[in-house]
Length: 446
Image (cartoon, rainbow, N blue to C red; front, side, top):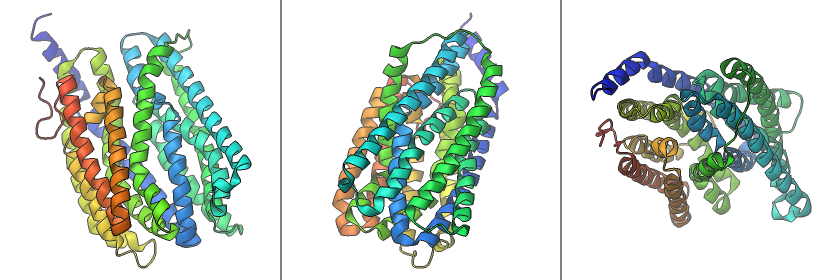
């Protein structure tokens, strides 16, 4: 093949995909915004029905449930986006089938084991938990395995570019069912307590997971057909476990401010801060949407040794993420008085908190998809180390700033470390893979 043949062929492939990642990202973002709208509605409903103390308890328990649920996939959800497309691009469907089955078994086993340990601890050492938290935690132990399994199903669907099937059940259907269940529970006379809200989440998660699993299994049978399965446990776990560490650190990083506040301030103050973070999630969804559209394409391009396509994907992801984050962040800040007022009166002091969190997300978006490159192309251990260090830094800053500045200090700590982490990840990805990711240099290949 001539020296110019590869770029020409790559350009043709890219032309065939032109607009594909952008359309996919818009689809994901539309679904996430719709789900965020229902989630926002359910949070507003919960806060108004339960009051800030009970809502703060629910928020604290939900944070731990989500954090552990994401981690208990053992990194196999992200690993599906890395391994399955590469196996298919190389024509090795036996490995693809093997990975999908093995990942489901390991995710389910790990989640059930941790839930069982939690239940045993709750029974044997109940005094470890404040009385108001015991019932919500007991229900949350049933939610956690469903959350982990649905996270894995999302990764498998994303590996096939079935973005609607990946995103709609966990983020749109689950949130819709959660809100409907809460309304039904209150109408039937259930008390407005944290354990009731968590029970509604259990019902919603069970229904959404069952529907997604059935639909995904049917599509996989058509896409991969029946056939033998082969397994590479050492390779898969050797790559996925560091990704699990990244997921745990990411989840901890996402919720460290709420966790520290939960230890240092009243449940009511936690609830008020958590309300601001729920609105800020609209900004975070931008990166999620673009990443969901692009992540698996990195793996396929790498398997084909297609540097031209990789560079173009990096450039598009960086520019699209930054532009959309700025636009969404500005819109959220403009609407923040109204959005916060829906939770109830007296939330005007949360506007500066929301502004700091949004500013951190916007600044971090300018550094591009460094984390995605390290996770998909090799460098997951380095990424895990950087993220763990960032988590430690965020926790340290929160512990220093929260006693003096309260929720405002937590927001400032998280925003500062968010930007620093994005810069470090961008530098690490550029040095390791020769693909600069910041928006001002993305697309250049070294």
